[in-house]
Length: 88
Image (cartoon, rainbow, N blue to C red; front, side):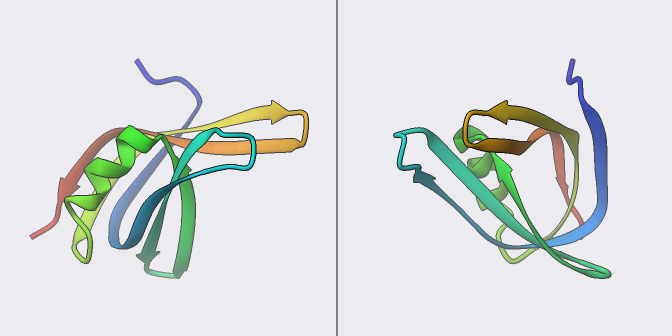
């Protein structure tokens, strides 16, 4: 069960997604989505980015939760994916 602030995106195009390593050596990943109203970039788990990569340049519906974590260098907001579905 996913806890946190529930988030659902009914229709968005996956523009870009990739994983990287922070200066602290932590594995991170991001997904850039275009939706009606703008473009947003969200941080995701490196395992989750693979699910988004399958839908790159396609329209999707995504559901999950936003997590906020207090870090020594600031706040980290991360998206925890529960479900992703291609829109035909």
